[in-house]
Each structure stands twice: as C-alpha cells, then as structure tokens.
Length: 121
Image (cartoon, rainbow, N blue to C red; front, side, top):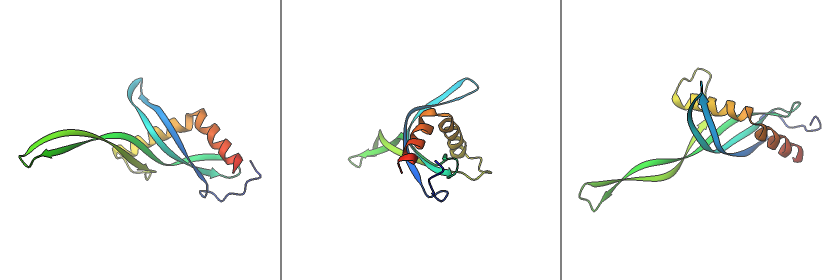
C-alpha cells in the first residue's frame, strides 16, 4: 500500500454494519445497525480511524388525532449521527461512539473491506 499517496484524512469509505454488539463486563447492552465513515489514518500503513457513525434506530413521536388532544405514540425510523467526540467529552453519545469505534477497530471484516477499497482506489 505504500504506492498510494493520499494525504491523511482525504480518503474514506462508508462501511455498513449490522448487529454490531456492545457488551461490557459480560453484559449485553444492544445490537446496532448503521454506517460508519472510515477515514485513512496513515497513508504509509493503510490503517483507518472512525470519523463518524450513523446508527439506524426508531424514534417515538406523538401524533394528535382530530384536534381533540388525543395523542397516539407512533414509532418512526430515524438515524442518530455520532461524530468523533473531543477527548474530554463524557456524554452518553461520546461513550456510545467510543464503544462502537472500538468494536469496529476489532472487526476483521471492517479492516479487510477498508484495505480492499484502498487498494482499488
């Protein structure tokens, strides 16, 4: 991969994932579907870093019927976009990003797909 001359952070791929599980100390917290932007970290090594993550999910929305104040809970599909947090960010979204990020770094499939698309570029 040393033949590539990409400036750092100028090349990325959209990596789709399904059932990315988050477990901590043996406790299962959830399974996530979505897309991660994997960006070129070091052109000499061909490795990536996770720039952003879009998680597919469901949002609850209340719908008022006929102006009578009757509301019905409705579930609609939505996406939560998580951008790389600052190192001192301790929000829930930052922790979620970091857990998903570490799972993506450990994914052999993500590494192989990134390397394959980098090689083809």
